[in-house]
Length: 308
Image 1 (tube, rainbow, N blue to C red):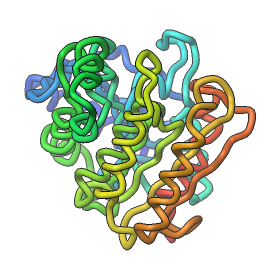
Image 2: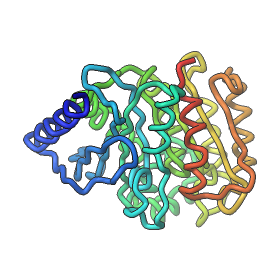
Image 3: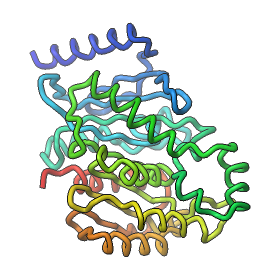
């Protein structure tokens, strides 16, 4: 009976969205566990429109309330047949297993696909960039960001456009304690920026392989320096926030450790306690790709989303 009611709920949701102007099609990622509702082109005002997929657990029940995990680079999370490198995070399998084992709170996942041509400008924190020397800033913005710094606009999209839509159309717990964000590489920078800029919205952030170096085309210690300076002044309160960091030791990840250690010092200065409301995990031998992140994803979720 419950399965029939779930299918009926999702069918009604699709109709509601169609009539409200959203373009939703049946070409969603195919999950191994749970189900996915796909919005083909979310009509954003602050950034370019993009695909959004909402993962619902197998036993999704609209009479209950769910925490929400927002994830950057949503196209890489569920279905390797749709990704450029044929890799995925296996978020659907991991979340299904974590929920079955009662290791995390009841939740849904909102996967925000990136727009390839604007990924860097959407994800890179804008306020730290403004602390750079003018010449370096101009080179970065002109060559890598398409002339724009959209990091603030992307977060505004998440908080003022996407979150209200999710909270209206799904059965969610809307408060900070039950709202989380995650990403990898530049997507991790964006997740960290989100919890710093909107500490009243996000209660936890998972930052996998945080891209502290900022740019490999313009290697310059100024970029991580301004990121860390911003972090020092803007970390959220340790009283009601949790932050997870990790990094590998191979390929691009091999560049991160010196800056992650400095970030760890800032976490301690702010009052975060290791293994309580913050952790950083060094993953020896791990690289910078979806296969690596899917190994670490369950631990990241268990850290920020358990009920302790």
